[in-house]
Amino acid sequence: MTYNIGGIQAKSTGESAEILAAIITKESPDIVMLQEAFESGAKKLAELMGYKMLSLPGETNQHVRILSRHPIQFKAAIKLRDYDGRGKNVVCAEVETGKGPF
Image (tube, rainbow, N blue to C red; front, top):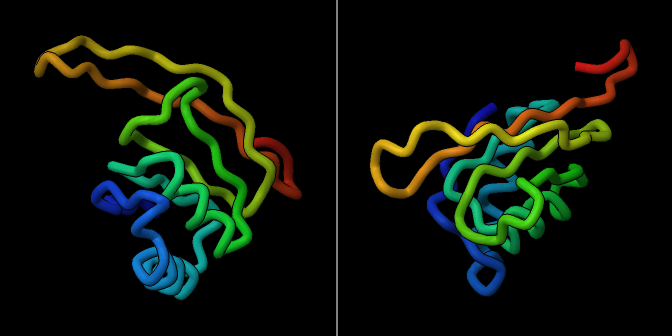
């Protein structure tokens, strides 16, 4: 599942995080890719749902975060060409499932 959460941060995660957690939990995905997610807000969301969270190492700004029901491990980050002056990254991760890594 992918979800653009529009920059939710820890100080504003009370009701917002609970609403987002309810929406995501209803769909019951094994893996969730969050877009526009500050680390603090994504961490709160992961805690509410009982998921593990992966962030690009050293990244605390608004960025992509991966939530998973299963253990998840960072593998690589690939910088894409900078077309808009802000730059983009591809985050590669491995999720450990009962049937092997994914």
